Image (tube, rainbow, N blue to C red; front, side):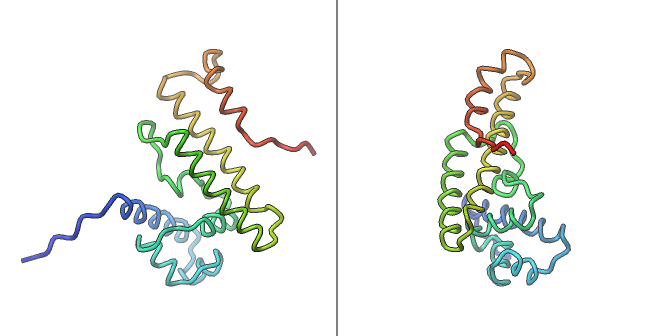
Length: 166
């Protein structure tokens, strides 16, 4: 009699999905696990565990992936394809960004990175804010170019990281 595999917990399902996305990034760059692991500053065995869903992606891993593979979309890496009805709430986005920011500051302090990791997270914070705004506008069937979108857009646009003029 064949055993049925144990049911995965929601946390395990997330780790497996994130691991699959990490594997997708690695394979898109035609890198072996050894080379990808070295690039992002982890071991081959840890990368293998991440890709199989047996280990969780750390803040350090996320920052390293975004640094070495800048075309990687943070929202996709962490949340997967975000549909309108399953888009994380503003509170969930903010909690996630707060955790990444704390981790980025620790990385900068440990490496003397002159706030590089922190600035990298700020850029992706803006991307997540805009993704959240777009999701809200789509759910409410509002054209962002119309004046009725202004009251919804203003708080999101005000929360974006300030840019420095050259």
